[in-house]
Length: 312
Image (tube, rainbow, N blue to C red):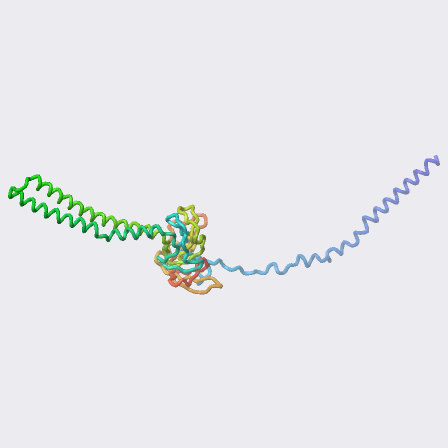
């Protein structure tokens, strides 16, 4: 019995020590708990800046006296191509050059056309064939008159008189043909002049060259898919595009005047007039478009800049 009692006593003692240690471990941290409320968490939650009301700027369309956002654009942008396939002889403008309507921009090779024009011009004023036909007609008419008299006097047969009449009629036809040929030469001269003009590409409006895509010596191709020679933009007049809220519909009418202010760093105030008011409102955004014409005769107003417009 003593041999079994000793292990049992040791087991009870170890269990008692384990319970005591557990009680110390779980009980010791309980004392510092009152210090928890004094931790630095309070400054983090106390944010006095939260209730401060920072004012937000109103929408641009609601700003009094500043109008609506807009964009100044060229009236049109085009790519200049050749109407005929030919070698480029010379290009007379560079990128950024201002051009006038009708100004010669590109000269295509036209040696053969110029030679044909000279030939047609000369044939249109030639007098040799006409004078020769007139002379033959005079001679044939006189011969016929003589034959007519001789027939009356019964010195020749009627057949001789008829032959003279036929010769006179042929001479008259030859004279008409000579005059027709000269008239046809004049028409041919006009046709070749038009063909020659097609090899001189001119500016269709007052504007600026925005890009140069080909160079002398290259072949100018025809068609929409062909590479353009020049890119151009019409800068007089300019157009001003603006999107307005539907609340403005009916208040802006065609012909109305407006003041356009270029946005910084550009400066300038310009007068424009309404040219187009869209008749269809975009239901998704509740807006509609308006276009204004902005005169720019001296080319001082740049295109492609933002602006603000105020309607009068």
